[in-house]
Image (cartoon, rainbow over all chains, first blue to last red; front, side):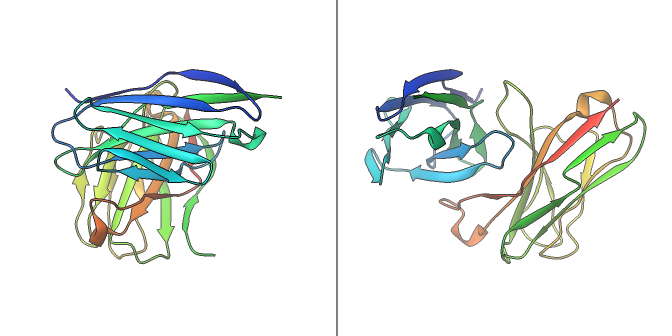
Length: 109
Length: 115
């Protein structure tokens, strides 16, 4: 079956760095998405990776290893507003998105 | 402001009642989707539409129906609501001309409680 695994919850300190991991098992693979979702709000797009390597976008970076079925989202210089859930989703061979349950990130001052 | 509008934002419904969640987008996206989000689970696709006039079943379609009469509107109907349909429902759209990398744009969600 198809599956996405990511930690349920993580805690980090304001100003620090945090890495949120995601492993996936899908029927075929056409890319890996990260979305941010603040409590009570809609998910919003953060990043898309289809090739191995690191994509950097400001304070956020996303990494992909296709051979390992693994991705991570790296958040630097954490701010209180980064407290949110981070959703990992893989695009399978039918271009259907398979979603993880999300990682709730708690930022402490 | 361009985007996706869902209505209602919140609704309490008696079991057995019929309910339609509305979704309208003004980005002229071809593809639209309905997801439900439940605590501890990933977003689950209910139904989708790749273009006006066509619809398809997602992962959890039972008890739900959709229609896509035009590009902008994609209503989701619960014919006879049951308590297990208590959830937060998100409508989303994407530019299907960029299918592989198409970012999803989500509405603000509709919180439905079935008693």
